Length: 184
Image 1 (cartoon, helix red, strand yellow):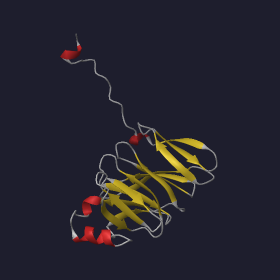
Image 2: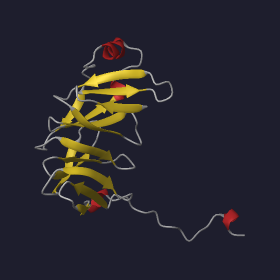
Image 3: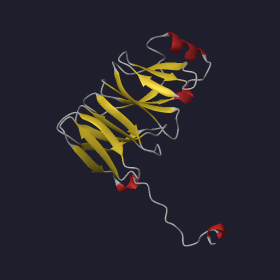
Image 4: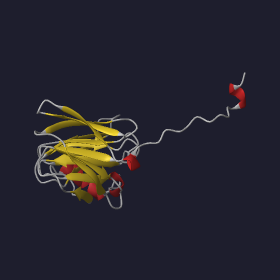
């Protein structure tokens, strides 16, 4: 699957093998600026728009081969699939990025903030926010163990932000017991 977004405000989901359009979705007011696919649950997509919102979409809610899918392909604006709207930013969203395990979603905006969200399919919520820069935040990147998130801005600075410890990925300790095959 490949997801693309456009200035007309729709999300297009494509079959990566055939190149065929699977469906087109709408919901943002105005241009969509960024998209991310959950690396663990690829049916969950996050988008960020010029409308100052992050939106979470669940492709399980649109049945393949249904009338809604067919209609979504025919309309330039797409099908208005039910989704969650995450509000709080005061500027267009420049980037959305899931953690490697898909448990958290970060968004960065022209409002100079970075926000961390719980992308739960039942009740997504804000986890934490950072007033990050003095100018538009252009990119963010998670540290693999989720202890930090890095932000880069048009102010020319890069910052490392400490993520609340309850969200860190705990490293598994190596046990003193080895399996029998490893003891040669």
